[in-house]
Length: 70
Image (cartoon, rainbow, N blue to C red; front, side, top):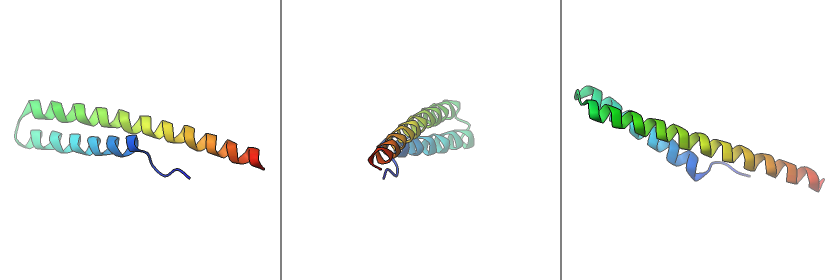
């Protein structure tokens, strides 16, 4: 049984880091930090989505394998 993969974890951590950077940039009026945080957030979302897709494919193939056994 597959629970979560590395891309999902890293993507969600990068998304959280991006949100924190963006908020810190907003609080300190630093537009470069805001932009960097937004880039990290977007990259994290993409990595998490990739991990989600890989997880769905692996889960589907595992279900098909189990069906063939019975």
